[in-house]
Amino acid sequence: MKFENLLGHHGTAVARRLGWKQGDEEENWSKKAIDSLMKKLQKHNKESMLMLEEVLKTEGRTPSECVTIPRSLDGRLQISHRKALPHVIYCRVYRWPDLQSHHELKAIETCRFCFESGQREICINPYHYKRVEAGVLPPVLVPRHSELPPQPVPYPDKENWATVIYYELNNRVGQQKPVAYPEVYIDGFTDPTADSNKISLGLFSNVNRNSTVENTRRHIGKGVKLTYVKKQGTLFAQCLSESAVFVQSRNCNYMNGFNMSTVCKITSGCSMKIFDASVFRSLLADAAQRSFDASYELTNMSLIRMSFVKGWGSEYQRQDVTSTPCWIEIHLHEPLAWLDNVLNNMGPAPDPISSIS
Image (tube, rainbow, N blue to C red; front, top):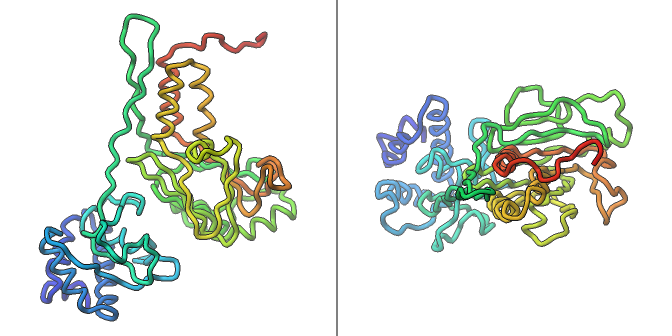
C-alpha cells in the first residue's frame, strides 16, 4: 500500500502523524518508512495494521497490544539508504522527531516483544516505549579562596562533540576528524563520499606502512559505530566488524570497578558504554573540592583509545597501544571544556610547572 493511498483507507491516522516532521527530506523519509511498514504488516500481520491505526488515533491513552514486524539479521531496517533500528524509526516518525538513538528509549513493562527481548518479532508500537529524558547535568561548584560563594560551572555544549585521530603503530596518519553527528561509523573501507557521519580508514595513506599494518587494515571491515547521546553525555561503542575492537577508557573502567589501565574487548555485534558524563561530573566535583592538581588529573578521562583487530595490555603480546597496527584516539570536547572551565575558575596552579621545577 503506497503512502498516497493511505488517506483513503484505514491508514488515515498513520499519515496524519507526519505533521511532526519538518522539511522535505525528513518528510520524504517518513513517507518511505510508513510505506515499508504497511508492506510488512500487510504481508506478516494484517491485524496489527488496524491495531496501529487505533493506537495512533488515541495517542496511547488506552492500553494496546504489541504491533510487530519480523526482526532482520542485524536487527536494523533500511529506509532510503539509512539503516536504523525499527522501534527507533517509528518512535521518531510518530512521536519524537528529534529522537537519535535506542539508548533514549525504554520499553513499557507490558511490551512482550520489545527490541531488547531479542525475539524474532520486534514491537514497533510507538506507545510501547518511553523516552528516557535525562535532566541537565548539574554544575560543578568550584570553591574560591575568599568570602565569595562557590562558582557554579555548567556542562558546556559543543557543536562538535569529539575529534578522532588515526594512528598506525606510533605514527599519526592523516588529518584529525571532527565529529558532530550523534552516530558515527568508523570502518576500513575506501568510501570516497563526504559523509559527515562516516570515517573510512581505508582512505588514509601512509608511505611507511608495513605488511602487518596492511594485513590488519584488511580485517577492520565495518569497524565500529559510536553513538553519542548528547542530552545524557553518554557514549556507546558497537563493534560492527567480524574482528573485535579493544577500548581503553578511564571513565568506563571507573564505572565498572576496573583498574584504570584496563583494556576492554568488544566482540562482533556487542555494544558497550565507554563514557558517562554523570560519572565524570561526580569525579570532577569531588576533585574541585580537593585541589587544582586533583582536577587536572581528570584530563585523561576525556580521552579514549581504541584499537582494531589486535589488542594490547597485560593479557596481550603488545603492552602499549602504540604497538598495535591500527588504532584511534577519541578526544571528547565537552568534558574537556568542562574541566578547563573548572580549572580556570580555580585560578592558577599552586605550584606552576617551570623549566627548573
